[in-house]
Each structure stands twice: as structure tokens, then as C-alpha cells.
Image (tube, rainbow, N blue to C red; front, side):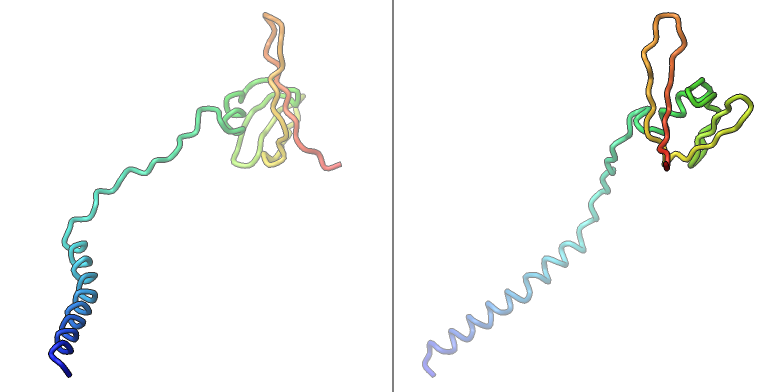
Length: 117
């Protein structure tokens, strides 16, 4: 070998060491630095009355086309009509309509559920 050969080997050896050790130093710096402060999680807040369940809760106690809306439970809506108790699953709810009324009249509410005909 000539005098150039060992110099190339030395340069190759130093370069290999730098490649191997550089990521190790980077990882050590990350471990030594304090963890970043946790950022507050941003969650969109639902608007009041934005879900159909919220709308039903807001009209609880009012008269509808199905009867008097008495209770909204986890999965069911309960109506009282002429002494009968009617329970409908929320999953079958199709529409809640607020119909126009003339001045001085009570608000008319129409609620429809899907039927399995």
C-alpha cells in the first residue's frame, strides 16, 4: 500500500464513527431535555340543541301529534295519549317538525317515527 491508502482508511473509519455516533448523541439530547408541556386538547363543543335528543329534551312536557311528550330516556321517547303510554325507540325517529301557527295559538309539534309496513 502507498501512503495514500492508510489516509483513506482513516478517513473512512472516522466517517463511519460519525455516522454511527451522531444519532446516539441526538437521542441523548432528547432524553436530557425536559418533556414538552402537554397542550390542551381541542374538542369541538356541540352547540346547544344540536342533536335530535337535545331538541326532544327542550320540548319535553309539550303536546305533540303523538300525545304529551313526558320523558326521554336513554333509548326511548315516552308519550302519554288519552291515558295510554306510548314508547318509541329513538333509533326509529324520522322527523320533528315545528309547524307555523297563527298568533295566539300554541306551537304545533309533529313527530314521526319510521314504520315497518
